[in-house]
Length: 379
Ligand SMILES: Cc1cc2nc3c(=O)[nH]c(=O)nc-3n(C[C@H](O)[C@H](O)[C@H](O)COP(=O)(O)OP(=O)(O)OC[C@H]3O[C@@H](n4cnc5c(N)ncnc54)[C@H](O)[C@@H]3O)c2cc1C
View 1: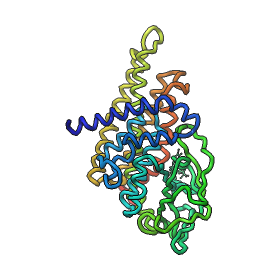
View 2 (view 1 turned 30 degrees about the horizontal axis):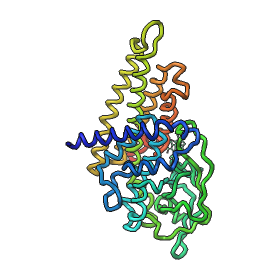
View 3 (view 1 turned 90 degrees about the vertical axis):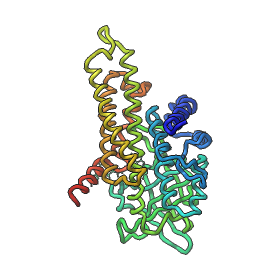
View 4 (view 1 turned 90 degrees about the horizontal axis):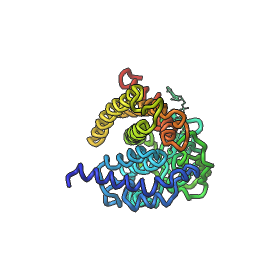
């Protein structure tokens, strides 16, 4: 079997996994606002979490595109809330620990993340600090062999399920970017609590919550990397997060085109199939044309990432372009379903509501444009 065949076999195994363990239950999870823990164990058991982690830490040392493909396929099947969950674990947090963590942190957390025993969340955003992350108020004050942490985080994906919270806090409140640090926080420590599930317009199966830290005593060895270097680490790891969001966009675009293509060949109006009407044909053709352009840009960025050459402005351009494209395409495809497109029982409606946040999290698309502009025009 050559490499391409191996990759496609892995993809089809995962598609079967989604059909068996996710599709029948997803609506129930949407009602509960939670992906059950059993699913995390199943993902781990079947080798679908953090697949690029080295074997020494319980992983499979798979190339990064294997890991990204899982996120893409999940979104393509219409399960974007699960894609966000897996992306948070495998694409966001795992690289932080792999690249910045010390040996003890890697040995302790990574095998459990691969097996699904540990679910992770990354907590940066606060009520008054989203785009402007330097304005965070959560504080970590060193006292002997511990840090004492106080603060509140909001909009945290995987927040309810989280066993490990990767927390961004201020260790030097007199400084902005240069006073931030990252901590690996055991979610069961005294003083850590989780708020109610936030009600959202989409991603209904995602457990997005507030997190509270009330005099949490964190052992100093749970600092990730060096003190006050948190912002630099965030900058270093952001390309992977934005690549993952872009993968979700690509998967969702393809998934939405697939279900729309089926629908318009089955639905009739005025005695003919919708697929025979020029408007329908042009909308779908236009979606496919944009999808092909997006796929080429995305593949270029994946290749650059694998060569360790993906720059922050380049991936910002991708994230902005592909999530805008996702929004436009899915809006136009939904129109082809008429009133059924507005009904929750038609998956296109889920593609539509789940698409909206893609332009907001991971850095808003305005911030992406700012990054691109800065690369051309300076500050
Ligand atoms: C469903 C969901 C899941 C999330 N998951 C997580 C998570 O797991 N962990 C986490 O830490 N965060 C998470 N977030 C938070 C997300 O990253 C932030 O919402 C996002 O970064 C925007 O911050 P904000 O909401 O404070 O908006 P603001 O920063 O207040 O932005 C408001 C508006 O102002 C614009 N704006 C701000 N600054 C500028 C500027 N300089 N130039 C031009 N326009 C600007 C923005 O683009 C936006 O349109 C999540 C959010 C959502 C909705």
